[in-house]
Length: 378
Image 1 (cartoon, one colour):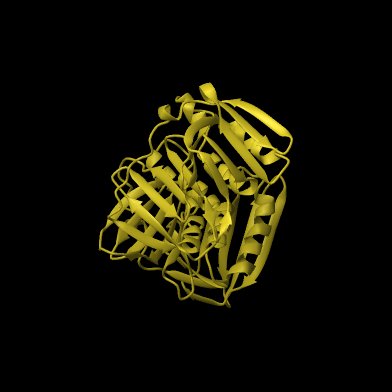
Image 2 (cartoon, helix red, strand yellow; image 1 turned 60 degrees about the vertical axis):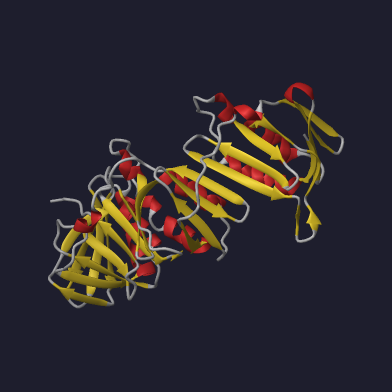
């Protein structure tokens, strides 16, 4: 195998596939990156058997030659060393050549590295996914949906299913739901699909985080294929595979209250800053709890009290308050996470009592909601 390639394109592809490579693997060859040169271009693959990423660099693009293929072939190179080498090479082009017995030479300018390669035949094959059931969504919308839900997944392995985001596709609407049993994030959006297939799967939060880092902020459509135990995201020169979590995701629809006793509308930014200030003193305490109380005359009071440090009280003008008087306590962190995920300058918070979950929604937008369980403080 021998080819000459533009260094910046190689660096970008290596960085993308490195997101799937881990040093903690029981399969030694997976600490490497698989490189395959064909007459069409060069394909790089990284995998940790949960996530697999394949990045393709075409021979030419928009009339520019990116890769010059001298001889086709394949090799697996140690990811840690290969990625560091490529980043630090001195010139804009790189020549990679595999000589006898998997010895690989990497040349750039006057710099030459020799790496011992591994046999590409021994690298596990990526899942073969038939693509009859594809649905599509704009890439930037997908990134937003991930950002607005993935933070609410559980970090505890006691209930592995909650470390993922539940994706539910029905009637050409995708609903993403994440919960760690103390809070819940939900976002819905319309998708494009040829058929009315429905799915109910759980994608690991870690996979979605990595996917989001790789994708461009473009409105180009990304293809999504869901099978029994895998999901494939297919962008222009990128394939991203992730395994699905096994098990049944809890029915979260029962958690979301349909009625409310108190409704408060506030300006999102103003409320977020007030919670942030209140949490300055709460943070030292072990549970970071902030209290909220409605005050007659459409204002709310945000406060926190940590006996050994001090207390903070702040009043905010609400846009509107309807219903019963209310005093409630909650985690400042959960509230700030939820507010940062919501879009829109004004939000409505619906409460059904001091010890019941409450829901935050942007005004006039039912595609997204955040739910938080209060904290018992008295």
